[in-house]
Image (cartoon, rainbow, N blue to C red):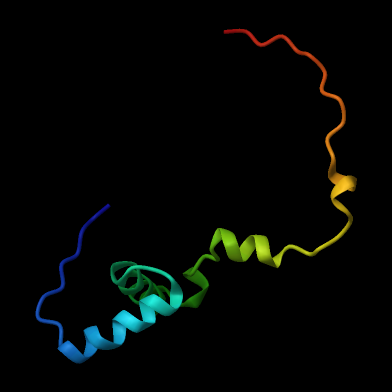
Length: 78
């Protein structure tokens, strides 16, 4: 993956980036990538996190409904 180095960033930009990254639970570098991605490709390019995808799943059924039954032995070739 290509690298991008950004130099001579205003101090006030860095001061705003840091709390924003903390709020989103990511590094400043990742927050920078997200801002670039969103501004150039649009919000649709932003993929939901795995955690967000899990939290979006509906709470249906009971744990017992999803219990695995007996497993059948099968031959696994090396």
